[in-house]
Amino acid sequence: MEVEVKFRVVLDEIKEKIEKLGAKLVREEIQEDLYFDVPLPNLLRIRHIVNTGEVILGYKEIKDKRNEEFDEIEVEVGDFDKTREILKRLGFTEDIWVKKHRYVYKLGNVTFELNRVEGLGDFLDIEVISDNVEEAKREIWKVAGMLGLKEEDVEPRLYQELIKGKRVT
Image 1 (cartoon, rainbow, N blue to C red):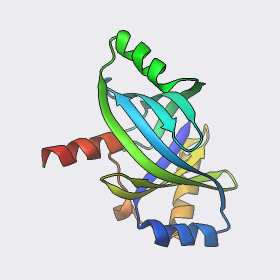
Image 2: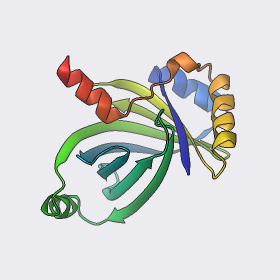
Image 3: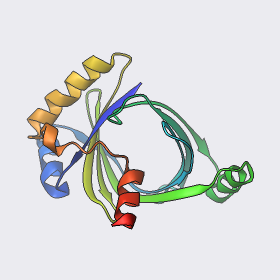
Image 4: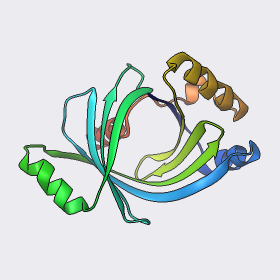
């Protein structure tokens, strides 16, 4: 199970704090995610990691109301456009693009995904993969506390929801 909590942050400030904890930068990615219109709690996307050329087809099932627990399946595919065309021919409708610059750090079994999301701002996902959700959340909150993050910094909405919300206002 993927357990993660998303926080609104200031990228440069939190990046420095993450590095001071001893977390190591493992990769930097320019991501373009195309989400398809499927009913929640399901998510279906094609991720193009522009700077590496990787293309990943991903499915997630949200397991809780705060968008912190996910059952996720990902597979690398060879071609973004052909995968997109297959999904469209199967009847899936394109919904939202989410474009972000991501820095991925690791500290033990904790992953930090620091994102600058186009049109939305800066976010930090603190993630632990575990079958024990409560233990994973305790670990996430311990690290969040060390970074000075609090409950009021949490952003429970999905990026797709935030982007759609911006369109309405």
